Structure formats: C-alpha cells, structure tokens
Length: 489
Image (tube, rainbow, N blue to C red; front, side):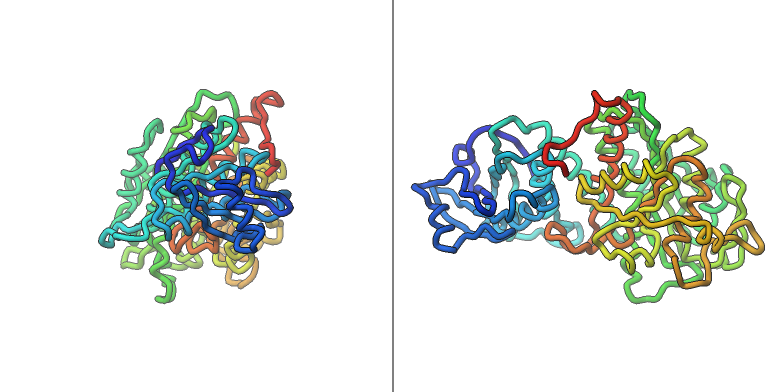
C-alpha cells in the first residue's frame, strides 16, 4: 500500500473514501455537506463510542465516521485499532484510496498508529492461493493534517512494511524457508552488511550448543550476522534472534496436534532481520549487530539425545535433558558471540517457552533482564510501540534449578514450574554482566488477539526493536538529543 501525507483537507484529495474520528464530548472537527456528520451523531446512527462506525456520502465520496472514545484514552494503540476497524469497513465498501483526517491535537504516536493499524490490517498472505477478485484492501492511504507529518508517516510506513515482511517470513512453511533461504533473504537487505556461516563453520567456531540442535536435520544450519553502522557514537547494540525454521522437538517429540504451528519458531529471528533492515532504510544513527541462529530441530539417527553433553562457545558444558528445549541452546552461542564481538547492550528475542503463554497470553511478551535501567528502556519502548512487555523476575533459586549434575548446566529442569524463568536464567549465564534483556514472544508471535491482525504471524518485535535502538541512540546523545512524543505514549 502506498502511504502519503498531505496538508490538504480530505475532501480536496483524490480519495474515494474519507475517515474522520470524533471524541466523546466533542463535535466533528470538519463537517461536510451542511452538517451531515453532525446529523448522524444527533440521530444516534453515529456514536462517539470507541470503534463505533457510521457511513455517509458527501460530494461524491464515502465518509466513515469513527467513534474515538475519550480523548485522554486515545493513544497509539487505540489509533491502531481505530484505523484497523475503519480499514475493514472501507474494504467492504471497495475503497481504493483512503484518507484519514488526523484528529487535532494528537502526538506523533497517534499518527504512527493510524498508519500501522491500516497497513497491518491490509496485510494478506496469499502466496499459495489463487488471487482474490474481491474484498481487496485499499491500494493507497493518505493522512491529512494541518501541519507537515510527512517524516512521521514515512517512518511508520517503513517500519510497518518491515513488520509485514517479518509476517511473510513467519507464515512461509518450513519446506519453503529452510535456514539457507532465510539467510539468503537477509543477504538481500540494503544498507546492511550480512555475513553467513554454514554448519561446518558454526562447528569450527566452537558453537557446540547451536551445532547440537542442528545435527538432526538434513538442512544445514546458518548463523546470520547482520551489521548496520549508522555513524553513531552510542553503545553497540546486539540483537539476537532465535530462528528455528521448524521445531519438531527433536527426539523429545512434540505432540502432533498444533505441530504445524512450529514453522513460527523462527519469529524472533525474523524480527531481528527486519528490524535491522528498517533501521538501515531509515538511515538511523545507531550501531547494531544482529546475530540470528537459523536451524531446524528434527529427529533422526544423528539427532542430539537426552543425556548428551555439549560444550558452548564460551566453554560452558550443558547436559541436554530435553531436546525440545533447543532454542536456548541456539541463543546461548549467539549471545556469547555478540558479547565476543563487543556488543555493549544485548537483547534476545525468541518464541522460547509455553510457560510464558500460560502466564501472559498474547497481551504481553515476557521480559527478563539483569539490568534495571536497560529493562526500563525496553519496557518504555513497549509502551510507545504497543508491543508490550511485562518484566518477570530472575532469582538465584531459579538459577540453581538449572545447575547440572554431570555438566555445568542442564538445558531444562524436570520440575514443571517457573519454566520461562529457568529458561531466562539459562540465557543469563551466557549474557553474564553485560546489560541484557530477554524477550519471550511465544504468546505474541502468531494468532494474537488484535483488531489489526488476521490469523498467522504478527511480526511482533520489529516495532519494538527499532524503537529500542532509536531510544538508545537518543539517550546516548544526552538531553539535547532526547525526544518524547507529545501525547506521552
């Protein structure tokens, strides 16, 4: 979808469908055709309740009036939802060009939310279906405001396009996206230096934990190293992504029901790849190293076995208790590699545990961190972007639960408790004292319950990681370089 910004009033654009919002206790900012919209409100056909829709026709255009609820509650997330429901109605009306009249006196986050909600709702994954001949989303979106919002619109459109590409990656089945093809996709990013190691190179480097996961599959693993240097002086940020392109559980085989969803187990890696691609497109003043471990986890005669002991890149020995706790083995070596490469702040993002789904559902991703300030920055970015994270605890007792009998660590405990937290403590061992945040997105990576998502991959983490990087760059510049959105989201 083509996205544009304008200072023209909506009815002077070439849009066939205009969207206007109205807050509780307020009137329509710019009415049409002798008070038509005000008349709809007076009659009760239109309401100011959040998400309520009414349609009118004026001057040869369709006008969708959307209730926005209380002004004080209208933030970026509510903007995404309002944009999505309006886009759905516009699609039913066969709109081809949609123009949103940006509500008066809102901040940058609301503008971004209108773009994001529209583009996320318009996403379709139809690679394996014949082209649809009806119910197509609009081809163009225009945002009309009194002041110039072009930069914010461009930034939101760029980031959301990257998120939708991450959704494409997640939705693609494992037979069409083995590790080699995921690496080839990363190599096509513009402005990013990408280096790819094959499975032999992974083994020679000493990444024994990662290599152990990969050894059961006939598809070679790939380590994908993405470097973007935006000529910045701030800390070098390491983004580490789990990209298990299909996870059967290995010899600790998963149940057959829902195993098809394990193509989504590479969603963290997809988020890292596309976030770094978006930062490069934006020419962002940040220094970022992405490390993505891409492999399948399959049972075969060559598979790692429960009870095997492997040696990680940093020399730590690990007893494999459960081969379905494979993501943390991949991430362990990727985290160690990022530290070895001089990253001063670390974030890993992964569909790691079912325990986090039980705890938080799809509303929040889990956040665990060894550094309070870094955790707060990550959480603030979650609020700003609507990709929410909820901090959960680390503790010596959880760390004690992963101490091994025959090796230094075990990759899983036999106790059915605190599974998301013991997994985080396993990763904490490899992050050591480097400020680090672990984001468990197992509940948010697909089939999330949002008005702007259909079924399938969500691309969760792209907006979040981009904002974290930009926030870190602003803070590195000091007070003069810092910026807050005017609506405080």
